[in-house]
Length: 273
Figure 1 (tube, helix red, strand yellow):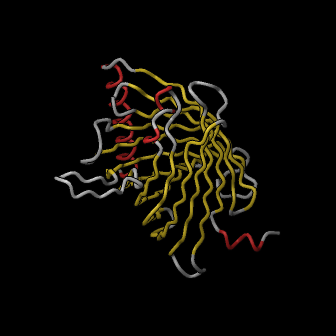
Figure 2 (tube, one colour):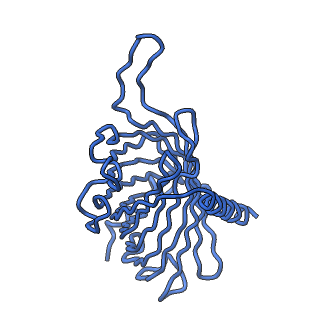
Figure 3 (cartoon, one colour):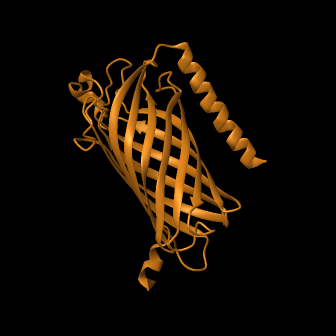
């Protein structure tokens, strides 16, 4: 029932975005990108359900509709997590502080000349991962709750009148449904497994320091993965993403390759045969 609810919620959100897009004249801005993400994790010891995690993100982008997706920086981030494995199929993770350094999306000339669009950001994140199996198919429901402090370098506190320069703060809820389909084995966690990986994710933002583009992002990925050790795997595929700007009319269409590296149990790397 829970899985059905999450799937229904995702379908509703995606349908709402499509209907909203039909009501407005949208301007799509082409943004070629290259995304990479590196995720490390392990249990603190062999007898605990407590887990540490670390993810590092590095992204590049094209400039004003060009196809060279490596020409400009887009984002660098690092997030340490503490997690608890409640059951074999459910893990809850908490990131107290993650730091993000982001460049504007170079889709229009105006972005290049506005240094205020370059910003650093802090996030606090609660994440719930729930896994399910239907035959050989692996499904992952991921729900994230984020508190974002954007523009943290805007810390010029002023006592003049009621003006106060401070970072903007808002909240974001993210839901992602991922499927992984083994190709040469019957089980995703079998060593030397080739698999198809696919996901779709919706982002909903709100808060007093936020605008009105509540359905801010939709991200879709399809790719090929390989588990080369029992505890490590890579994925390479294609990302297709919509980012709605604050005017609710311009939408950045980000598309290009994405690479993942996952090491699920770092301690096991000492025992490679």
